[in-house]
Amino acid sequence: MRESPDTRCAVIALAGKPNSGKSTLLNAIVGAKLAIISAKPQSTRQPVVGIHTEGETQLVFVDPPGLLEPRYLLQQAMMEQVMDALRGADAILHLSTLADGAPPPLEELVPADALKGQPVATVLTGADLVPPHERPATAPPTFLVGATTGEGVKEVLEWCREQARPGSFRYDPEDISTQPLRFFVAEFVREAAFELLDEELPYALAAEVDEFREDSDPVYIRVTVHVERESQKGIVIGSNGRTIKQLGALARQSIEHLLGKRVFLDLWVKVLPKWRRSPQRLRELGFPLPGTRNT
Ligand SMILES: Nc1nc2c(ncn2[C@@H]2O[C@H](COP(=O)(O)OP(=O)(O)OP(=O)(O)O)[C@@H](O)[C@H]2O)c(=O)[nH]1
Ligand SMILES: [Mg+2]
Image (cartoon, rainbow, N blue to C red; front, side):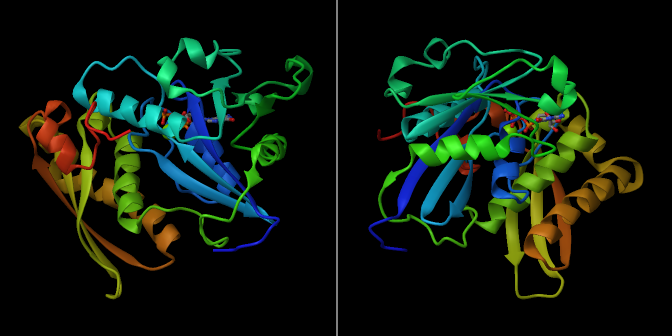
């Protein structure tokens, strides 16, 4: 890692309701598709880390799930990760869509122990959907962003850079994430499910990489798609396997793009009853359970 008296760093957490555009902004900042995006809420379940290094400043962005009232154990585990992301942050970007307007202060949305007085900027997303003359006037630390068009991202980054403090880089300046390829593979399978499947199904679905042979050509990746019920398995497979084929083709595009290699994606659907409410299943799928963290 670069050791220099001039290097500066900050960890920046994104916070906001589901669908406020956190993952879209993370990708716009990093300039690559890391986090999955969906028009349906609650697509992010585990925080995605994106690194932005420019000159002597390294910013580490954490894109956690959206803020919600948990109704089952998976959602509790998701909130646990939001709190971890906030606690570990030097500064916070609080997102809300322009349509929803300015969000209430974060202190009203999260437990007091999740915050430690970090600077918070408000980011209003979806600016591209509103003609310029109808947009509200804003001044730092409030920003208007069209994350899909990249408008306003530079100004947000400038604010983030101002939050950086002297310190050596934590990561190689070339790195854009800290997470293994397996993580992104499973995420891209879930993203395809959010795109292609309706109603409850994307929420009842988890993806797990069982095998990843990077040295084979094409790269061989076997993924188990877990659903909660036999009837859901039937829908995910579809008649003559049509749906699972579509799902695989869509996920494969994103995976090949990230890997820069051809991929053979072998998808298997299994029923894992009630995994979203099972501490053991959630732990196996890599979710931290509430109250089990050393903080
Ligand atoms: N037009 C426009 N659409 C946006 C913008 N930001 C996000 N979106 C869209 O809003 C939807 C939600 O975006 P995400 O980035 O997945 O939202 P999120 O906050 O990560 O959502 P969760 O992970 O569910 O908490 C997607 O359909 C995005 O394409 C924006 O600035 N402009
Ligand atoms: Mg997200």
